[in-house]
Amino acid sequence: MFKLLTCFFMFWVGSSADQYTNPIALKAPDPWMVYYNGYYYLVATTWSNDIGIRKASKLSGLKDVENTVVHTIDGRVMWAPEIHLIDGRWYLFYCACAADTEGNRCHRNHVVQSASDDPMGPYTFMADFVDDTNDVEELDPSYIIINDQQYLLGSYFGKTQNLYIRPMANPYTPTGPKYLLSSPTYDWEKEGSTVNEGPEPLYHDGRVFVVYSASACRTANYTLGLLEFVGTDPLNSTHWEKYPEPVFQRSEENHVYGPGHNGFFKSPRWNGGLDRLPRQLG
Ligand SMILES: *[C@@H]1O[C@H](CO)[C@@H](O)[C@H](O)[C@H]1NC(C)=O
Ligand SMILES: *[C@@H]1O[C@H](CO)[C@@H](O)[C@H](O)[C@H]1NC(C)=O
Image 1 (cartoon, rainbow, N blue to C red):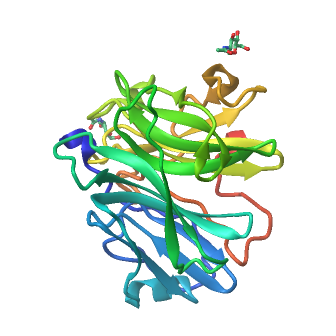
Image 2: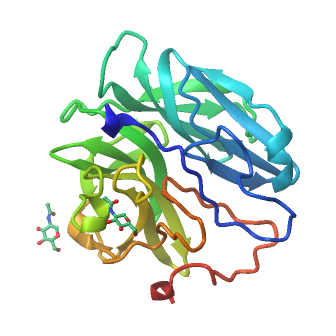
Image 3: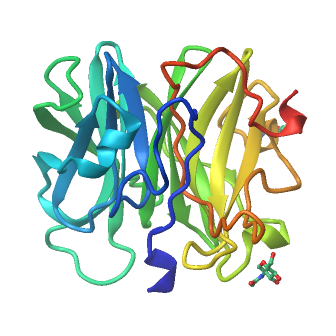
């Protein structure tokens, strides 16, 4: 059961321009945010069958707005939603258990599609991403585009909890099974549980990274690690390099505990700099 607990800690890399204070929103585990046409949109785990979005013109306004339900799933225990704008529509990826499954390890990844470029929907159900060649629990879906090819990212249960990457024709059509992207190897990926989850794409200067969460999300040592695509085949895990140290981690001094399951968004005031990212990124 513990392995299935999703993450209650939230952590943001944000601009300091707006006068916000942390936490920027309550009851928002596994946060994912975008800034689009003048508004911030925040989605987060609800543990129910509703997927909601909070919309505000300022970061500090997110605290006061209600979740607007944009989709009610045929299932339960919704975790880790993310919205991605691809070819003019929003794709809302999430994981949930089918209505007729009970017990542990019932999560699978799914996607719904918006009718227009409005992140508030309405959304239409498009796909269950069940992998018939390896049907195990999958969670934490995300999406990455590398050299014009699209891929679904996620976490799954093998001998340990790993990251996967799966080739896609479009956000709702897989063209093959999932491939192993990363397994926990360092001690800092094994505290409490042996876990890699919450993969998030990050692009900079033509380089492609995946930031992911490691160790047990219920512990203060839940942490963020980094992969960089260094080869030619994204489906081959040896073409990704794992950085030996976490990129964000617990800090007693700064009162930061369990920084994990993050998201990235570009601030409207973003100036092209990434001075808060780790030194290794140059
Ligand atoms: C977690 O981090 C703390 C402080 O950084 C460390 O002392 C501890 O050994 C780590 N591991 C566990 C399992 O708590
Ligand atoms: C993965 O990449 C390595 C290094 O390029 C190569 O030796 C290996 O054959 C590749 N594996 C697959 C399944 O393509």
